[in-house]
Length: 243
Length: 113
Image (cartoon, rainbow over all chains, first blue to last red):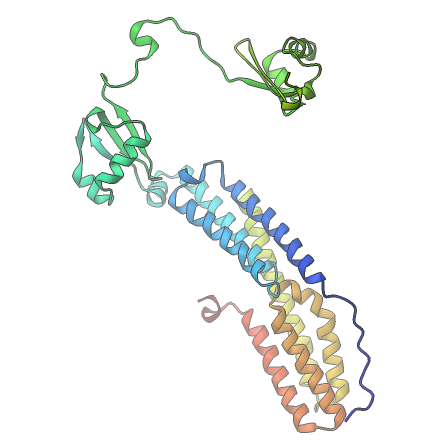
């Protein structure tokens, strides 16, 4: 037996494990967020089936090295990068080719045509009457007899065109003169001025300062929100600045 | 452009890590298979493996890396103690583990599926 075993130094590495987990979690979080960001601006509820699958897979792949720190980060990073690349390639091809797009995302289906429910089309899409009623309610339509056309989109949402006598009145229907509304410009948000919005709105910093005084504030930091829309100013002071 | 970057990064990381693992395993195997199992041979092999460890930890499972390290250390100590049969057993185990390591990086149906 060896009477002189080698000295082993305790280098005090016990707490490092948690820090490693912390750093890996941050890195993977940034990667997953970037991946989902690259995929595009659609909300989760409007993703195509393929996009939804990729989003779920990316999240799951990111979790693999998180759960086991003996696995290298690459075991999550490489598959995520591959999925991003594949998704981007398919998106570009879908953009150029109708045929590929139809194969990947399918085609919309007309569920109600000229006021008549297309039972065959519903059966093909495994879409039952409860689903139809729910889809119509989500579009603020509570009576199926008001609907002229309803289209089941490829992402599962329902687009509805009401019958002429059931739809809301438009200004042109009654020859009502109207003014085109524009988007409001957020000039101050949470005390911070947005100079680029001032430029887009065509107003100067001097004009803003005078608007601030008219709205009862002393400086931009006093405001929670200040917007300009069609010449009208909306302003809300921060709670501690309210009278 | 983004898809090229993403694919390029993924492929680049995969190929370079695969090549590095194979070359490291080859270097260690060259030392282990050269002569009879002596303590100095295990030491040399362990040095090569230890130097490559930090990079290997970026690429592959840490437990697999430690298994090879443990095997080499046990072989060295057995050889030092004069336990030649045990040292031989550890040598064969180390050679097997290193072959498996390299085999895992091969692009074959068994690894893909």
